[in-house]
Amino acid sequence: MFYRKFYQYSCLLCLLVVAVILFYAGHIFFGGMMLAGIYVTNELLWTDHIRYNRQSDYQYSFTQGQQIEATIEGDTLIIPALASTDNVTALLEITCRATLSGYIFDPYVAIQVGKNNARQYFERGLKGKRYLNVSHLLSNERPIQLEVKHCRITEKTAPLVVFNNPELEGKKILVLAPHPDDAEIAAFNLYRQYNSMIVTVTAGESEPERALIEETGSLEKACMLKGRLRAWDSVAVPQWAGLTPDQLLQLGYPDGCLKALHAGNTIRSESKRGFRQFNCHKLITDNGVNLSWDTLKQDFSEIIRTWQPNVIVTPHPTMDAHSDHQLTTKAVQEVVNDLALVDIVFLYYANHLPETDHWPFGEKGTLVAPPPGKHTVGQYFSVPVPASIQTDKACALAMMHDLQGPVSLKKQLRYWLQEKLLGRERCSVGDDPYFRKAVRINELFIVENTRSLSDLRQFRPKIQKVRESARKCEKVRESARK
Figure 1 (cartoon, rainbow, N blue to C red):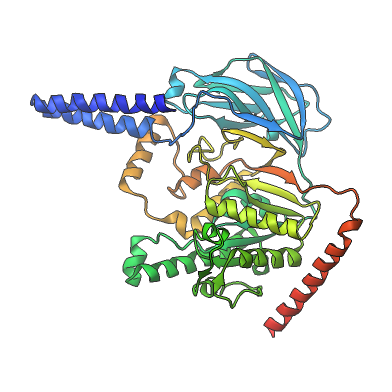
Figure 2 (cartoon, rainbow, N blue to C red):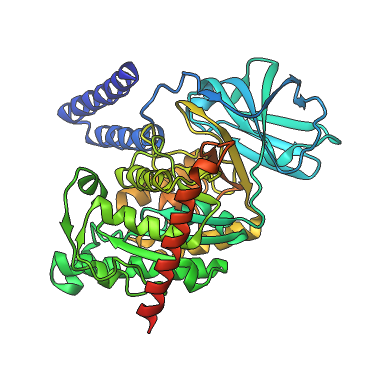
């Protein structure tokens, strides 16, 4: 990592020195061209913000799944016949490296089965083990064709790891979004298909745009307005996917506050009531203004006891780098533990990687595969997103105020250069990077289950208390409605 950065900055410094010499020698035109070349080179080659060694293996240890030995002969992937290719997630472990062009252009593998095809992109300059997501193109009847561009697969044997997908039909799903738009980015097609409830933890009111500050006349008022806009987004946009108002809750915690709450601090928030004004459900903590880690857990506890989910969709506690994301999951895990709930399935997602903000790699409409790093996970779950739903998902993101903020002239120029010179397609719906990263052929989750208990008799008193608490919550809600 250090040597790559050193090489990058050394190249830029050398070019800059040459430009200065040209200016000093009176060659203003050539000096200007050199400076333009430095700028274009930087925007094209060194703006992917990859903070790890691209020439290292992705290292995953899976605790579930079946491993099958597959082979690659020419451009054909040959796998033993599977019992079923339906409702499974399959990851092919390949060893590949970038060609010379793969240091400039985005490497990818095109997968084709009959008339069905998909692309999966990798980081430029890659070398080592990677995982190719072939989940949605597995077939026992037709050969799988692989077309490799700007990279090459160096080994002909490739382990195929196959996971049975969790059964979600008839289950109740709780989707936790630390901020408005997190649920749409990670799980739009998942929550629209099944019986889901979305709970958004914060209003996402920080860092309002300059236009809001000018409109309201102060930073405090601008934050309040932005929070109300995004709180409305969190309970309105999911209805575009078919959810009803009683399946949506905005908790209205201040943006970025969870770290302080977890540290034991209490925060006074008068704005919370304003952010919760669009909720159909009433919570016991609605009228309180003092927020703490205990009030967050109380909110989660009341929601879980009332909704009684079988599946909880939440950020991964370590893969996702954002503190609000990590602590949202920590809080709900503590609540599940406190309530002694068993057979809860967790589906983890990651919207903010510490290694890079460019993942998932490649264009919109392509495959999402496991991110870089060294991880021990249970299994992966790849949810297909049909083309028509990709359009709906893009429109849902476009309705989110925070994803339609003004893009700086520098970024607009970068996107234009990358489109014209590197072939990176821009999304027509919006310029925010999440339109590229989130509108894909699939949504990807890590699956983990709470501990299985063979003898539940010792937990029956606790389960009875949970049921009694749920009945009390229902009485409180009824009185609030009256």
